[in-house]
Image 1 (tube, rainbow, N blue to C red):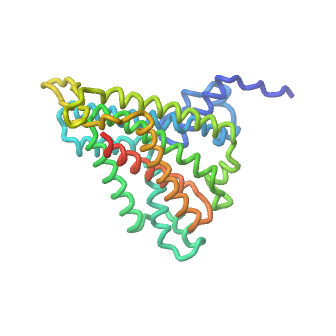
Image 2: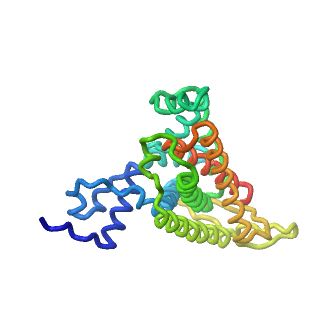
Image 3: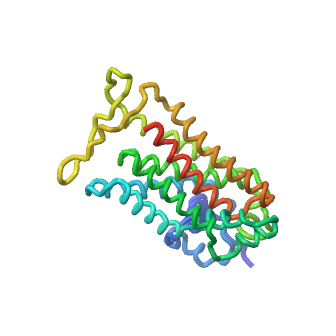
Length: 305
């Protein structure tokens, strides 16, 4: 029997990206695979694919931001445009992370660790889950609506990237709470893909934050406030962005501290709750961490821009 041919580097990357997309989205991925990979019955390397999760998150956020920008160009009000953009995000992801948030919120009603895990496995959604979903959508929609359209594209990409970084951080810091499920399939988390994913996420976020500062550059008025001078052309006129205000002292370091601090706060909040109530993490905990991170990062950015 001939040994299976070694996978090329390109084929490995294609399989990793396909695996990451299949985990984080509902997008078709077979077109990414080689004929040999399509015919293979081997399990996909979920752990090895974690390096591309932050990049996938940034791409999803960018697509959602572009839709919001286009809707604003059509003169739609900010809040409905943000709501439709988030609905598009749920279509792309299948509401995966929102489902995890709702399940974890429902699990908070259990009295014991075993009961909480049992509730989280129940497909029905309780009052805690509904409240968590409504509040998370309210926070994200209002935060996106408060940002200038062009800035919202980058803000959603940054929050999407950091939300997937939160998945990696929690999976690296907490043990699996169950002997089966997504958490067990990721354990032990491979360190090489983990560090590569974090490195790529840092570079991606720094680049987008730099672009946010560059695009917000303008003239400084007497009050020490720098205002955006550019505006977006529309079919019926211009969508002015003169209301964009950026502190004169804002630097890349300041902006990085803001978004990193918000993401770390979200990770600590969800991680500490998962450790205390469940003794570890599950796939639902990771989904909750992603949504809470998006809420915190987007809210923090509204305090800057």
